[in-house]
Image (tube, rainbow, N blue to C red):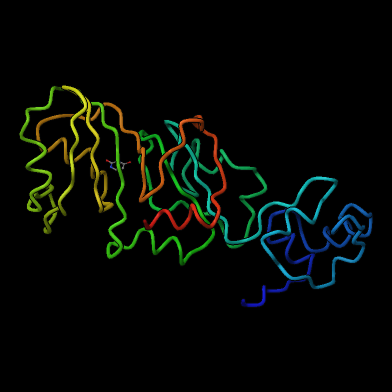
Length: 244
Ligand code: URA
């Protein structure tokens, strides 16, 4: 197995948003950091950065935050934006405030519109992010749509055809699957991530999406137990399920 990377404790904690390196050196001196139950008074030492560190290191008696390489599954609430910069409520507001200062930064894996709710992944692992959003991977995304008008019955064939064009675009949409749930409700599974794709697909059929909620991404489903704004960290097996 590959050796874990090592880091100075002050640098590691600073990269996790706990404060400046100098502040971390002071924190250690004050006896507020423990490793394996023993006070670690010198934060200039190097330690292996292993995923089990949050079980072993404590700051003021609290377990250390997850180390880099984290993947978060958030139940995105209505009205929150997937952006680091915009004014107004951001999806990052659902996470601990300290996590805004992490380096590498945590970003959303793809985006959901402000008015879309449901399963949203976030990570600080750039390579993973690109693998999930890469068009070559065809990671499926399933949305529950509530529509303003009754479905006509012709949508499923059009969406599955592979030659549906969206306004202003030069390339037809890849085939998408529609599962009708009621006159005005359906599940739509797409493998692309074009701008406002689901809303524009229904708009092209003369309908209007009233509510949009992502229920599934790859092999991951939004857990029923997760309320809007709540999140969980994914383990290795769950991360692998994205691609299954
Ligand atoms: N399609 C949309 O129209 N909006 C989303 O947020 C996701 C997919």
